[in-house]
Image 1 (tube, rainbow, N blue to C red):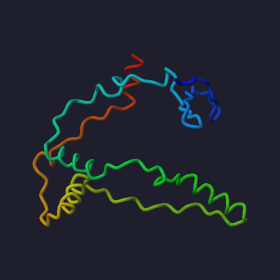
Image 2: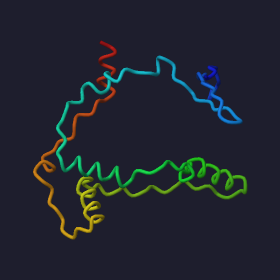
Image 3: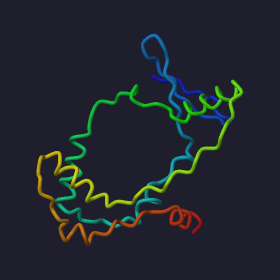
Length: 154
């Protein structure tokens, strides 16, 4: 059983579900109906596509090797940490300098990089050349906001 209530975060009212948990209570924010959109508005334009066997095997391998239990202590709020550091500097009277611009990153072929990674992990010294399907494979059309807006307006 949960209790439903309202709470204000960042100058906006939210619906919240309160649920008893041990000695305390847990609050989960819920969505208003206007925030829930029909998936057909976004995904119907994506064509069905046959995934090549080697790509499916590669994806399965990646998921199998990377899956683990969630450990929230491994994650840090880098934005908040940087903001706190900036505030400490300002409070101590240190000069605040604008961050330097980063060099643009090098663009790589993700499939080739993933294949090399898997081959290295398997201990295979030889590199496979991408098959015909990988070289000629086109990414599926992504559903953009414009199509959803056009449908909604029409």
